Amino acid sequence: MCHACVIENVKADMMSRRSLFTGAAAAGVAAVAMGAASARPALAQSGGRIVDLTHAWDETFPTFDGKPGITYEEAVNFDQSGYQLWKLTIFEHSGTHIDAPLHFSKDGKSVAEIEPEQLMCPLCVVDISAKAKDDANAMVEAADIEAWVSANGEIPAGALVAMHSGWAAKLGTPEFRNDAAGNFAFPGFAQSATDLLAGMNVAGIGVDSLSLDPGNSADFAVHKSWLSSGHYGIEALAGLDQLPAKGATIFVGAPKHKRGTGGPARVMAVV
Image (tube, rainbow, N blue to C red; front, top):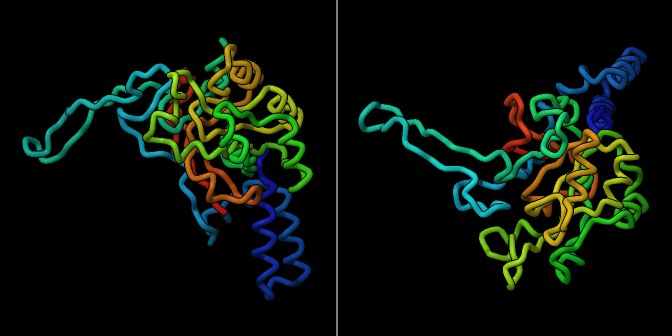
């Protein structure tokens, strides 16, 4: 369950109100700490900064197979009917989107079956932008996770761990997807890192590039191991450079279509 950051925010808010410094207030804080349902409403009242981690998306957004991830067909014309409506054809894995376990496992959870508690959780940002400048296929490796823990403390159970490689800034250029020779080239996670995170009970991982695996991956090792073990991933995140390494709460607005292997998502963070 992903409640640690919420609970801490509620505690801080209560401590700032001197009128609550009574025995009853102390008991109330303890009750909030014990119940996620009581903690959740505080998020809506947060005075924190909101960062949109979602790219705007249309038929020009890069996709893995090079085909448009969304196409538009006019269904109702405003001049003719007084309102307007598009018919959309969408590929699930395009734009900023979620990969559900079903994407790489025959009987895994669909996107509609991912528990809400896993979609609103602490966000930990691992910055590998320095090594990604020298290596387009740089990876978040186990050593990077260990270094993050050494610098920031333990990763909360139920957190989402996101890779910040600086790749979001390349969107709109060929380098977001390919190198000069036309080969896939973008950063991702190494299985050594995701195996370590699985042991920490992390709920999901995210990347600011096109795929959870690096561009030069020949076997989709992270997709296969991470998703098939019941976890989810977010691809093509934006705005990670605006967030601290720890302390933010992420909200993954995942679609809820039955049998979905994933789908475009509106992802935001509160700092």
